[in-house]
Amino acid sequence: MTDDISRSDLEGPKIDRRTTVKLLGAAGIGATAGCLGGDGGGSGDGGSDGDSGDTDTDSDGGDMDSGGNRIRAGWLTDEVEFLDPHMVDLGIQIEIHSNLFNGLLKINEDVEIVGDAAANWSLPDDRTYEFELHEGMTFHNGDTLDAEAVKWSLERLQGMDTSPHQGKLANVDSIEADGLNLTITLTEPYAPFVSFMIRGPGRAGTIVHESAADDPEQYARMPIGSGPFELTDRTPGESLTLDAYDDYWETDADGNQLPYVDGVDIDLIPEPSTMWSALNGGEIDFANLLTGEFAQQAEARDNLAVQTTSAGEFSGLAMLSTNPADHVETVRWISGFDEDPTTMWNDQDLATTDVRVRKAISMAIDREAVAQRGWFNYAEPAHMLYNPAQGWVYSALNDGEPEPGFYHDPETAEQLLEEAGYTGDPRLELTVLALPENERELTVVQDQLSEVGIELELDIQQQSSFWDNTYRYEQELVAYGGAADIDPWMSEFKQFGNPDEETGEGAWQRSLYFSEEFSELINEANATPNLDDRADLYQGIHEQFVEDAPYAPTVHPLNPKAAVSSLSGVSTQVGLSVFRTASLDG
Image (cartoon, rainbow, N blue to C red; front, side, top):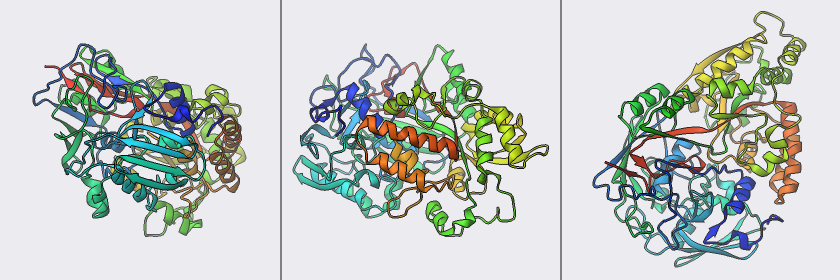
């Protein structure tokens, strides 16, 4: 338990905004309120007291009886490979499964942790959470959702060696179910645990149906949840069809059945310009993401509404810090591929293994210019990995301007390249793997690197091939970041920790940055619940990270979402796109 959060602060039916922000900061989950379309007013919701909703309808009532209305939505991707909440980790997947599933808890439009499947909860002691579930909940196949179903879901995650979220339940000692009552006992007090029970960003508390055990691959494609919508059809690489679940258990404060619309038809649109054309031309009602240039154009349209939202994200360049062929077994585990890692660097100079080169790349980047020119100011400059949504550590490190930090210093960058022996013209030629939505940002970075003598080639690939090739380590740089859940445990432990198959540390290592000293520091921080003490530790972790420079953060994105003016009630807090209370006028 943190010293400044009491046990009563963590009890239901609602955790206030102040405490929620602290908890999300401790867990690192970004928290930005948002409701797209209308004014998002009202506080009504289904459940016991009207306070537990993601959002309500617009203040004049909207169109409660949508009468066959369906939302046409665009998702900026070429594929959504799987939707099993225990396995997903991409924001585009989390946004969809947040419409298909319930969690024990969720975040409402006022950035408060409130009940979802749980009507209420209490902490009889610092290690015990007692949840009381709503009555009448069912999964999409008609099965009852009770405490036993939640217990099965949590225990399933505990036993999944391949899940990136297994560690969130590492300190769970026991789970007991009795009707609608669920009791979870921890091995030791840990206040951020409640954040892991949040639907969507928390993932661990998202409730999975037991059919996931029968055919995991099929479940990942066509999951059974209990949310307001069920996935009824999908065409790989093209579309997903979400239909309203007729027996969904929630109503709004006025007794109207949720959801209001009959369904959401999602088109997968991989090109940012195509997404904008579809929205501007009236082919879709909602865009889950617009790049900055198109968001700026949307802001100027009277018939469109734009909402910027942060999920506590970071963006930047992961730099290959060691030769993959020097760590064959470790790299095979990280990549998940059966074949040995690439040997393409064995007869070549892999420049990024030199820390001076990595520092030079980072110092060549003018982050303010990247935010302005690459993101049209829909981003904040990132002088460290930690983002504004992690308020307690962000403020401890001088409100995002830490010393030392990642800052523009082209003169020192050139000097470091000279010291590393790169004196030609160009000094160095590198390739960066990236997604289409990264292209504008990287064009700015490309120009900045050229000013210190580094020629950067952009290798732009679609989502499916990008994620396949990311862990083949055939490019020195990858445009890489975090989304939806970027607590220090996820962003550092999984992405930069020293690889360990037993604990899962370093399981997402794209930089192949192996540092026992850094690993010791982050593990000490993970075991320290007091926020002030943790902040002190993260100051040291940050300094080590700057010194070794395995990653060059560029910006903290503020992801613009857009909708036609006739669409209201889409919840966009913590980066989600939730249609549970969305309605269409006309």
